Image (cartoon, rainbow, N blue to C red; front, side, top):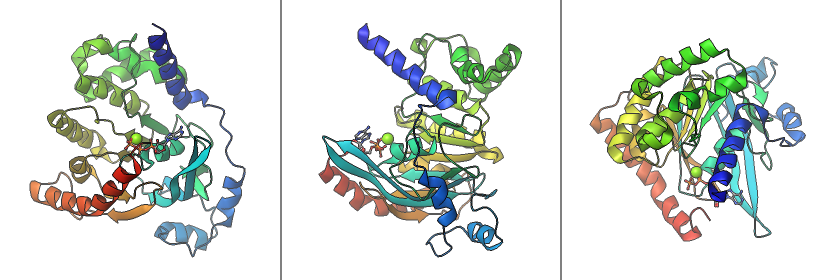
Length: 322
Ligand SMILES: Nc1ncnc2c1ncn2[C@@H]1O[C@H](COP(=O)(O)OP(=O)(O)OP(=O)(O)O)[C@@H](O)[C@H]1O
Ligand SMILES: [Mg+2]
């Protein structure tokens, strides 16, 4: 009983925090200062970023790159000792791009997404910017996050789970009902709106979680292993659905996954992280268009595995996730 209560409280706090309230985190004052100190001679700068600087525009004004991360470092404290997880990660995401991040277990992928979502304060960063502004907390108008577990509220129906964020946002009842129906239909659950999570299969719960994020219609969607708990067949079906839903190019998506197949099927670009402390090992930009056929998926998978193999072995030696 006490455990269930604790789980419920944790879920509510997590969801409320990302949707609107935030956790009152203090961000380093120097993020903004750093933004102004950026220079053009940094490696891997997107071309448009250089152009923005060249014409003297505000360095965060990157309409074609709604996510910019530079020099991101994060350390936790583990038994009194610093545990460095991210060791200077820099990348930018183009508008409408489907970017996948892949890396060994425990290398810091969830940490990275939580920082982007404004749920975690980075230890140090030259810049973490979303839609041209430094991230200083959750930004529910711009960013939605699908958690590593579905995180549904078990006392609410599928419909009420999807409407939760809209309620917090203060959307009128009629609009909430319209939108929740629309998005439940989009994820193929129109007949299940009145079911409770306990009456749904694992795949259905993940779909509700996806609808709950999509319904906010944010320009940025962050997904942390959204299909991790599913069997391979359901996972493939869900990937296809996600591809269909995101094919309008309206959303910029950052997906974290362990699945090479999912990464190869879905991504415009794939960033491979090293084992902890993570830096970017490499980037794969498939030249084939989606939806991809078997041969090109296989080629991308091989490339990914070649990049990941050593890192995964290293991570196993480190003790993944510890
Ligand atoms: N709050 C915390 N305090 C201390 N260490 C933490 C904390 N959160 C995560 N870690 C550690 O930081 C490292 C990175 O964790 P993170 O959850 O970001 O990894 P991940 O790449 O998402 O792993 P997985 O692929 O298994 O989900 C792990 O070693 C983890 O044990
Ligand atoms: Mg994780």
